[in-house]
Image 1 (cartoon, rainbow, N blue to C red):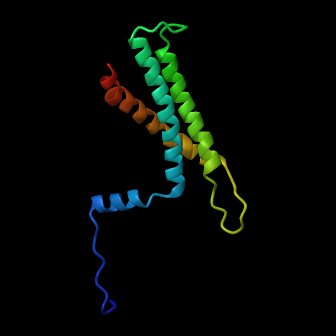
Image 2: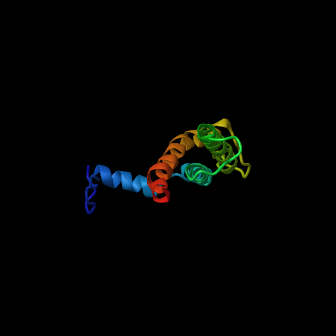
Image 3: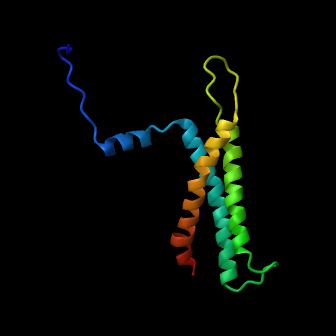
Length: 133
């Protein structure tokens, strides 16, 4: 049975559906991605400064430790993304004002930090770094 006066629901295209999902992303996901992106950007710029200094012939203590610096970058971004998301993203409580935290918040931060760490390093290494050569 169809209501009179109501128009049928228009089917949205794949792009329209994805754009709507992007615009209305859940706050916990936005917070997890934003926290990981902030940490990855700061640490990525520090790595870039270290890389540029070595490329220009600076004598730094310890020599060329870019591989170690990159490994530490990844570890710090993953850990910081997990910890910050654990702190910033509470679980829904239903009723009441109590905030609850669990390992799922940290897992959300970890899995948000994995692609962010990679993408920030790609942008820094492939887009920003050639301008500084």
